[in-house]
Image (tube, rainbow, N blue to C red; front, side, top):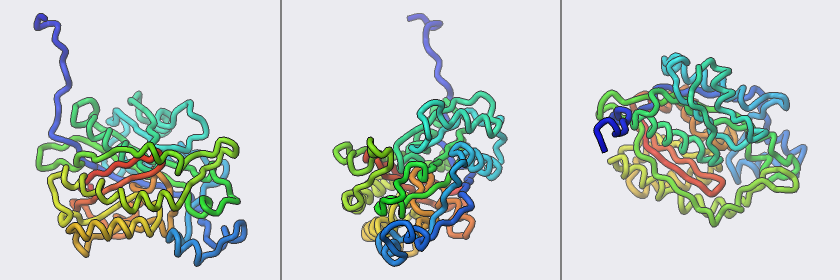
Length: 331
């Protein structure tokens, strides 16, 4: 082949880093007592089993793309990146009302991002971690320069409000991050992803084809998560060239407070520090699927529990079953 026939690739960079965070939750707070008036449950039962005290539910006419766009705007403001500089938008979601059109192009238009690559990603509750991994690799490869990654869910549209196994858990919200290039090897802020799936468990979280409502086999998911998530988290730490003792903050998907605490305990048994801070956003936000990790990060930062430059371990897991983890440096 002649020299003129060779393909040219974009220039690579040392890696990617987080530049900013943003989030949005509906105003309406739904307490356990309010749900107890609908289904056979009570505040003590919900707190003891999943750790939730309250959650946020959007109004019926609120749009998922509206929540996603506002979270994206806040992340861009936090990062200092102008919308015109963003060339890729990824929206992780499993609750769009229709598969076409996708959320990402609508969100980009609402924010004022001109002509970006825009696509949705659906791995349910691991969606943000998957999206972050894709964004980091796009940036590192030189395919993208600034990527807006948003996890957004309106799970209330997919609830059977008479099913206490799901209606007490799930909630609405959006969280976002801006991903850009690392200036040098020392400033790389998104580690390699450790990811995979357990397709033999696909039936444990699904949409009921008859009711079109979300169904979950809670005990099966609990058993799987409390045994399988910690090894994935440890693998992500290893891939990043770190040890568990290097982790300042642990931000797992906010599925169930008992799962969160069980995984954190296993990490400490493997060398994580006792003072490692652990996200517990589920207490007041519920399970927001792909939005839960960026929501928790943004809330922890506002509370002073997550500071710029600290090392955080993110782990998403959910329907599929799918999972993904990576170590990041907080913006």
